Image (cartoon, rainbow, N blue to C red; front, side, top):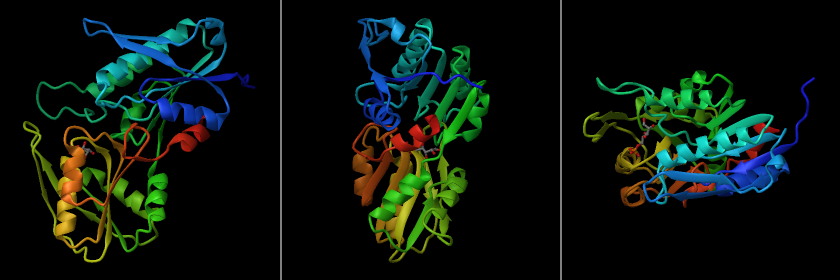
Length: 304
Ligand code: R5P
């Protein structure tokens, strides 16, 4: 029988709210982290601990999202994550469980142009090289990616939580819109949480791989419908804003712009509201004002 280890949770700098909430759900102690950037740009991180024996022989859960924000970059968040794992290993943890709600670089799961790297694989290989025991992420852009993990790896689905939130806002006559072909399966699965026969419409998106420019087509009949546009990520808001404009032009009553990871970079907030979004809804995989739905309980349930 597997020995039951005492658990402790390390709260990474990018997941301060979520980390503490998960620890509360699990009823376990947290330890925070301290970070700074050296004058040459290198990152520094230490676990806020004086007595390293607190980690010895424990099951250590690390929570660190790797999304960019106004105060950090995804590169810094990844380096911090690797530093946390390394320091925990050096303190003699018996088991290391890593939770990365938003996995940076997951969109580079393919080589779109000659000369490119398949960098998402490299991120997973780096994690493998640190010999962690379990890996959890949420609605990762390319679910097949986690097959690259050499340890137990789970991609947690946040769709029911997001759908429950939208239902709580009184949405009715719902239509789900998939902003591109790549999101169809996700949108179909999402629609099921609103009821058995909820329609799913698909927009045709083309992104210029050189300039990033988006073009979208789709003729929809949305008169008096509440429209839910669901994506895994809202980054600059280009995809979502273009979809919202099409939905509004097609007669939508209300538009809910939903993404598990609402990064809301650059002018995204302005673009989405200006396009006509009634509400922007994300999870606390990203710690910002769009975070309306907490992943704490669902993640804690997996860690129990
Ligand atoms: C792409 O395939 C993703 O699922 C999102 O649609 C995309 O990352 C959103 O990016 P942006 O907000 O910059 O259009």
